[in-house]
Image (cartoon, rainbow, N blue to C red):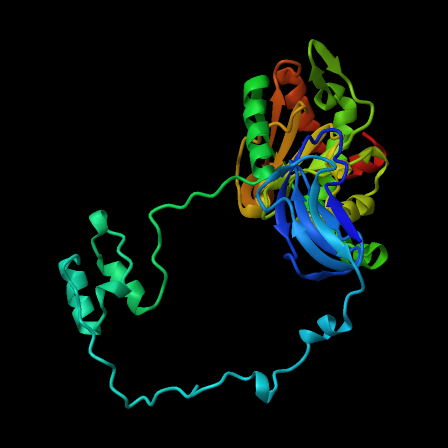
Length: 396
């Protein structure tokens, strides 16, 4: 019996998807629930499983094609998968399957046949190199102007390296296109402004150093910096609810919970899964959630609901060495906190110059609803909480 493989019902905010990768080709045997094809949406990759054991009879939607919900991707002819197909890949080569003919390498003493060198289109240095190495023009990929052979072209031919094209054009993935659209939208719709401060992280670093082993032994996860920043930001958002608000038309929407989006870099692009109601999360809860999101993001296994409902974002460019930046809003949110690299710098403490682990922090905000005073006071509260973590325990 023939069974249609259909595009699953897409989430409300997603209108279509792109066929990213077929993992089987027509004629291949498939097992029920085996991943047949990946569909790329604006935010996540959806896996479409085989509906039954059988043979993939046809592919109706090739890679790169845009599809809608319930469209037929392909046809599976239901039937039992022969056991022999499962063992074929494990069967070692026998004498009968070995290559036929003389496979011995030629003796190193054999002379190479003379090669006719065509140097008409080669530069002088390339011509000399071709003659010295008996390289024929037909073996060289010319990249010079007007099809001229250059010295690097000859060197690549000698080393058997592929010629590099002058340029390469690659179509944006759905995720990259969505990121581009959202960045432009943020620039066009919000009045973005960035304020800065710096934080002395000695107290946080001392806590991590003192309790890191006990923390990991008890909770099964490392005590990182991000959990401290999430808790500090959460308390600051409770004090300054306008930072946690958003704009809808001519209304300001105040959110009663702090749902913090955490920027995670992947090979496909930046994704921002959401930690929900962070006021009720412990440091261990936050670290577990961030680790889980990071693993699933890099494996392309985030669900749509993981990326929705954020009210504020934290991004850490410091993991890549950024010393200072002005992050772009994650619309429709009205503010984003940027963390940066920790550098030991001389600072004055109690009249003495000492070396301290310092970090610049940046808050980009929508100046339409957030005044400079609110942004600065928010950053000060984040700074105070991190420089004196006891404030987080005492809710000060």
